[in-house]
Length: 277
Image (cartoon, rainbow, N blue to C red; front, side):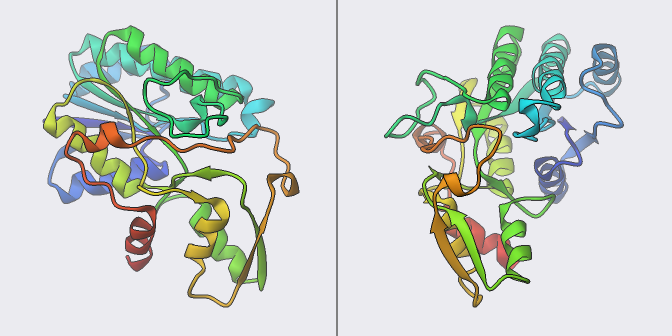
């Protein structure tokens, strides 16, 4: 079986390559320079040449605030048009697709956990584009899994864990938002789940995947820095105004993912394993 990874230089794309390499699986990985997913002809030519059995679509425009203004066109081109090209090529060449989406397809007003069947209502440009990308995958008719995730951290690229560690080196006290609730996701857990879906051949469709248990960004930061002398102080979101709307309650239900037989570690356990590497 041959895997094709998009977004090869992103934090998830690099994690997927590491995992596939560890498992001795055959794969090719394309970054945006090697394959511009917004170029439909290039995508089709690549699929014709590679003939992948499974496509792991990790390419995305993820600059959430820039997507509100100067990055708006790129956000739509990559997350919608690019995803449509990948999905259509997957369908045409008879492969299976695992595409990654986001908790930002929800408005964050739900007091309970969001299930895969709950109504969507994205309130920022990034979320709207990712939702349109989901619809493009569904409408393509490809054999596809859509995995919505949240608060991603891992070994590769910039993320909240590295930011907290870097700030802690020069600040004795940090202030972190404590009124946004969600679930952190280790890229390793996400990558393993993506391969799990293919391995167990469960029903195609949408799945929610993060690490288990909930946290605020303050909780997350406290755990990251618990072995340091840095003081972490909780503040409200108003302290750090941002261009793009962020959901206050972004907890996605994990029961459907668990029902596939996949064991999901808590975010604290995942963070500990990551920090011990």
